[in-house]
Amino acid sequence: MREKCGIVAAYSYNNKPVMPIIMGALKALQHRGQESWGVAAPNQSPYKKLGLVTDYQYDFLHVIRSIVTNIGIGHVRYSTIGTSDFRNVQPIQIERDFFIAHNGTITNSAELEMRLGNKTSSPTWASDTHLVGLRLLQILKNNNNDWINSLEILSKELVGAYCFVILTNNEEIYVIRDDKGFRPLCIGSHKDSDTVIVASESCALSILDAEFERDIKPGEILRINKDGVQSHIFSQQENHAHCAFEYTYFAHPSSCIEGRSVYLTRKNVGKELVKRYPLEGDIVIPVPDSARPAALGFAQESGLPFDEGLLKDRYGRKGGLRSFIQPTAEDRLKVTRTIIPLIEVIKGKNIIVVDDSIVRGTSSKQIVKYLHNAGAKTIKLLSTFPPITHPCYAGIDFPTQNELVAFNENNEISTIEEINEKVAQILRIDFVGYNSIEGLCKGIGLPRNELCLSCVTGDYQCLKKEPIIDKRKLIK
Image (cartoon, rainbow, N blue to C red; front, side):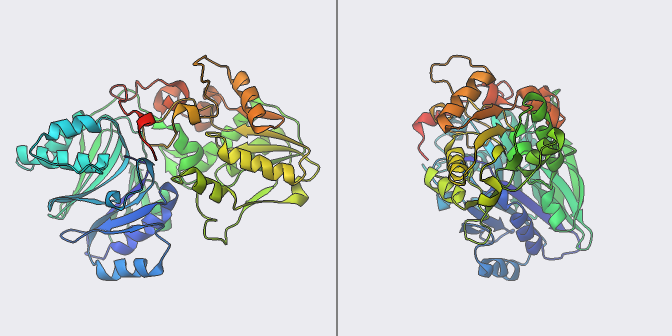
């Protein structure tokens, strides 16, 4: 089981209830996980639900009224391998000792199971997060419950991407981010309630009117308790591996990651696309919603008019869902079908469409169908992300290679131009243009050796060792 999720933790130093803060943060992080959510407080059973945080007002009111605590953690979940099993909804309670919530992927779960040995039984449905929690408990018992030392030992055993928030029944929070910094994590403060908040993205702080303080450093452990916030650096790496897909798609556009505005990076990536593809057309339109800043950047740089040719139906139940993170192909298509073409904008026009990525091609085919039916004269599709030809082992649901539309099943190295032509033929449109790695890095504003691009290059050296998950044997 691999997770691509959102996590939050809160500690109020004047004993104000933090569940309203945690629930508000989870709503702000809903774009990171839309399958399930949960919260936990010390010495209580965790409260978990399938679906969206916003699905039922009753749940929101029940949590903030019945779980009165000045310390807690929360989680929104999007599973990328395995079943959407309620038993894997987080935070996960590890015996009666602590709760754990995770954003990322652990690729050596089998090794962790072996380390647990026969003395600790793990259920067959256990996620990688559950296994990490059981292994951490084992290490704690062997190290006199020294949390910092135990987390440092655990970090040396883990292969993959991870951000953890851990809540103990002794009313302490521990936060740890892997030393490559694959997934974002930040810390801030809510002045009115004197609350320290840790969240996957800064947008969660903004919606709470909390102050962003800093990104939690790759290789950093935080202990948050009655004595304040203590930092411990367990590893310092010369280069990092921040996920490039966070900047182009996954993160909220209002967030800042590693000192860079997600909105502005997307806009810059769109401007970089013009340099590679100085196309002619009547209008530039985005595929809603994450590609909107890039399409605007492309239009401004090229001098072509920007318009909204595709709109999401915001008033239906699935209008706010994201197609990419839905668990099945059928669910993804249901979300894409909530997109409505504006015939008056599209009919008879040479359309340049900007999308954040072209992964499986499923959603792109549906978009192309809408545009054709609306009377587009020609369709040129641009992707802000380079061709994805390899699976992700750091927490994004890029499927098996054969499902990737840009993958060459003959294992031959293809140029971007060859991939563009192939995908254009598959989608039956006039032109496809993928971004280059260089254009992406320049748009984000980070050097190549600070980004994870394994899904593009197939180079997994940013992980401690070659991933051992065989995605072909795992069925969603």
